[in-house]
Image (cartoon, rainbow, N blue to C red):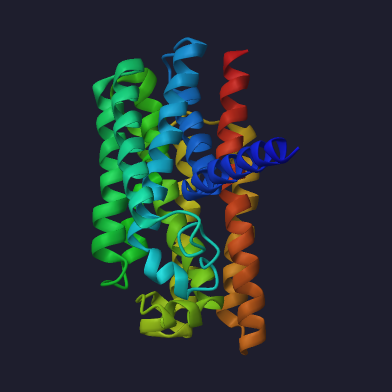
Length: 305
């Protein structure tokens, strides 16, 4: 009986450890990366076979996981300070710093080499660039030093649809550049809205987010400005003729709604309303990006069939 109980305990422990490593890869971020890469892959003019597509997206997911693991390795000290991140595997002591580092390096090698073999050197190179940019440029260099950390660092999150496109095309054109720009200009307002109601967290961790360095009013203005900039960029898929009215009409409605929410935040006069609207913007921004890329996916399926 004791032997059986010991075996069951060990199995449970192993399952929990697998879950800890899975959480180390930032699964929610990873799912968004895979989804946007899928859209880049599907809207591409050259379709590849299903097995190659699935394997390529698996390696893209592994690359996103590698970036997440290495980010948590380097940021473990500040993650322990912030309420938003203190329950991550390393601060909780579920995984050691060295385990996270070795796991991240292993995933990096597997993802880049794997993508090279199932796809091409261009997509593998952009994946390697994305991981490197996220770790060395954003996490190590900018995050603790520059108020523009999330603006410049946001480029890392904008590469996945470009990777998806190059998986089947092995070249670049205007379509993946437009998809890159949508995510790049979406990122600042998304993260600055989060930093508005989590500013104490960032201040405590000594991270120079915009509200901490330049104040709430300046941040609100910049969120509104980036929402205005994003609006015409989301129309570019229609302008360059890789999306039609099925995409355009909902995209216009979504964009105007986003601008309206950021305007409400801009005009908010007290901390309660500022927190209320910043939370609304943060939640809606995720839905906004998801629906924009979903609409592009729907348009592509209509063109295929």
